[in-house]
Length: 217
Image 1 (cartoon, one colour):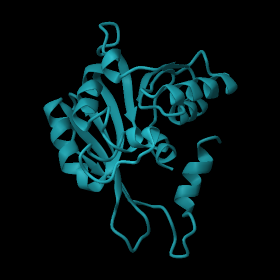
Image 2: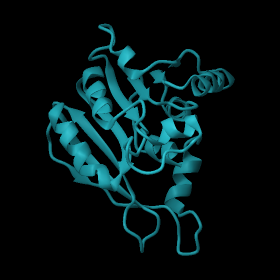
Image 3: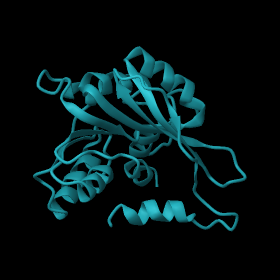
Image 4: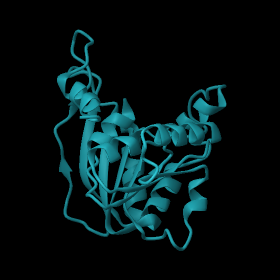
């Protein structure tokens, strides 16, 4: 669900350069290219098996001219030609700190869920170095990490522009949030209406269904 919801709130312009950090199997780049024409997306994935699957998904969807998958650590992408080159950086990162909570014995799942290869601080630092002035950074995180993210953004001159909380149901507190920040542009923050994922009957809300279905409209 998370990559679909995050992609629904990212709106690159035709011709934009976009980097997806931790692309997994390439869901976010495929959605963005389906909705917006003439994008140039760099999809970075540190896990070889996922990067290979992402490349195959790009090939099947005939998006080889728009999406370029790299099996690399994000630190290796900070080459001179890429610094300050991106209009948008987007990431659905690992949610849990390395030494917090039980780490999944399955290596692929552990890397996806815990900060074994990518910390929040590293993500924000890399995003700032990759973005053009006034470029945008989109991410999704658990609510308890919001203060940490805000601190990291401030250190890198990335200023929160929109914030949206995600609730399992209307009767439950938010578990996740999505945030969009702009580089070097501080115009204040807007708190968007919350997203509720399920009804009291445990069905997907119309808002969630619209995001899931709308990805490919």
